[in-house]
Length: 337
Image (tube, rainbow, N blue to C red; front, top):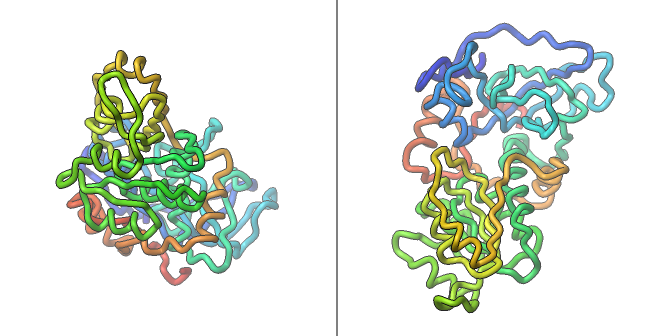
């Protein structure tokens, strides 16, 4: 079986042949694979950027056990518990985001296993280990924001990547971390991670509250919140505009959410405030940093929904519905957990 996208709105659990690995490949018996908001976008568009010549394999948040290794592989061994690094800055194939393979399948062929496979410590359950990929994305977003000790920082959007950013910030000792999300469930998850506060933008004036939490800084048109760094993980275009309008002089904005439409930005305000606006895609230089964090901190509460592979449509309905969830996970082979 393999979950594949055949066209706009058309995702199916297909019967496919077992993979045929080469001498430098490894086979991973998949234990769990998360569903990402980007998967919803791929399904709606019919592919990574629209329909392609072949169905798109889904699944890029992958954990499992090494089932077979080719004779040229010595970086992992049969029986190793691993997570798969789906993407890379190197010009090599990606998993679940346009490459020939996807993790929503029982048996996955992994090319470049020395780069792709990372050992999971025995005390970390493999369902939790699948969170390493979105955690790494959130971790890189934090790196891009260059948060310094003692600074106030805000994470807009507490889906899995935003929660990964909150977890990273708290793990690094930052105490002035504020989360903003529409969902009470996600705000509670952020507080459980150690956020200073979690704000509902529909009932709270976020910028006035940030002045209270992070102090103020002077600006020619009046004081602004003293928050030094912002991470945009919500996907809401208005957040970027609000940050530019309300941020302090010298503040930094790291954008990790997908924004498909152009956004009209006041570069005059950007100039006057000397703001730094940076994109953030994929992972830190060392992907295994996310596995290390999972080994230090129990993040199992972030996985709020688990489904079998045959229940893929039900899992999509949860993620595409109210968004009142943490990580939605497909248990491909829960016996491995």
